[in-house]
Image 1 (tube, rainbow, N blue to C red):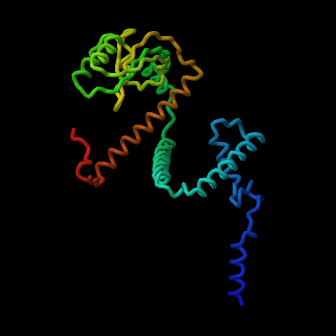
Image 2 (tube, rainbow, N blue to C red):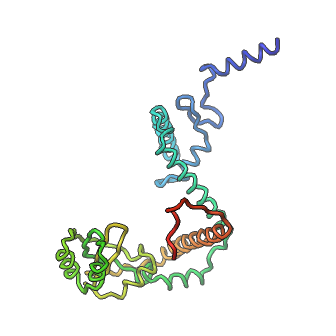
Image 3 (cartoon, rainbow, N blue to C red):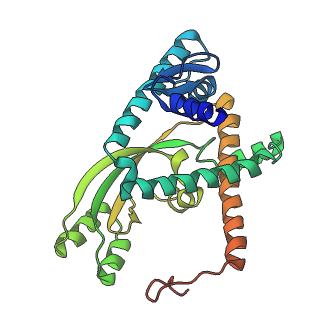
Length: 270
């Protein structure tokens, strides 16, 4: 008799009548999928446009969660969660999440930079603080030549016109343009290499397939205000510290890891 009762209970709970309700810690139910108070709090804290934990902000965040649940349900209904593209990207995102958590755990135990360390950092990065500028660049974009001699001639050009003449002489198509760029976004080593260049003296940034030759046509001083400098410095220091943690950890792990390559996939020898 008891077994029959247990079976009946299992059947009843498996039926649609076992509908989840929006009560307790469940703030909403979307097609029988719960959205909890913890989900809502996480949405609020992760929102880029978070305007505080107000009633309006919570209502907007809850609607965003509901929309996301509906869209995910539709994607699953279309079978996208079983596609190779999704599975590959899911693995990548999981990897990145774990790596970010690993770095965050290390950073959270690190000591907050002292005022003296922050001041030294600001002095070592003038492009971000005291000497920060907005540059106007004239640029020429072109496919990277395969001929080393052509690349050498482009690298030796003294003006952007010489770059264009070399490209035209070798039948290489190019596009001209201009842009403004904040020196604060330059990697420090790159900035040090080009900051001393005279206006209209070209520098080339080669990519895997495309290169961009640029000249600085104007420099507008835009020093970082004192009230922003500390916050920016600490954030930048932490990013660099995170990258150093990753580099050191990878170096240590590769020293003891067993890595095998299929012939033809080995890394190039130094």
